[in-house]
Image 1 (tube, rainbow, N blue to C red):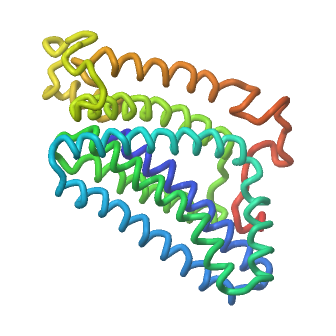
Image 2 (image 1 turned 30 degrees about the horizontal axis):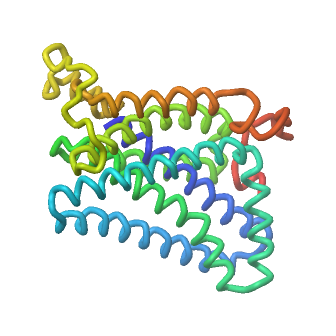
Image 3 (image 1 turned 180 degrees about the horizontal axis):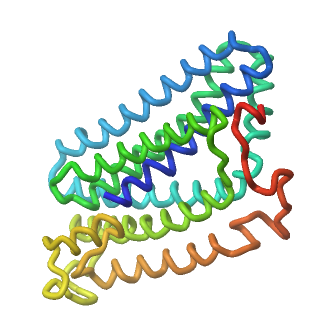
Length: 290
């Protein structure tokens, strides 16, 4: 449940920050007439993301078992790839997110209503589709038959909306660089579990060999149906009897990606030395900055 809460919080807060920055900029520049097209684009993006999630869930139920496992495993790998790209991209751009969005909005204002709708749709739609895919993959990996994963996502999104509103109202100051570094690191750990389980699905679909070749089996010490076994599975997608392929994939992804992401220089933070932001990384309210 915690891992799904983290997904909802992280992805939801990105979308919330985008929305409040766009709206605050329009209000501050006296372009309240452009607010409605922005909300229209946001609404379309949310509707498409929800429709995409429903299509994944209900569409997969019509497939055979092997086809379901093949689809689940393939989409898990795609989801991990998207989330990995997202956490690196956000770490590089968190410090300059506001100015980047303002530039896009200025260009859209000159082009008219359709461009405003498209700007809001693209800004929020990407987050929505990524969230829908990764949440579906994470819930599929958890597969404990309870609504707890979805409850966790809903709570995370609700928290993100609240934080975004507080940010807009000026009641909250967030160091975005640090926030996205910490949550990004935790998401990399979650993604490693989703990736490992995705390969397990591919093994069950007979796409990848080695389903019966276990790396270890500690089910006796950590029963999957125990409270701590459920907790480990919910947070880290831990499995007490993983295959050799799962453990290998998990390690080959987690170790280099986490090390690269947490490195002070290089790809995670941009090339060369990281420049200090004008506000030292602390983002005041969107309304006061716009």
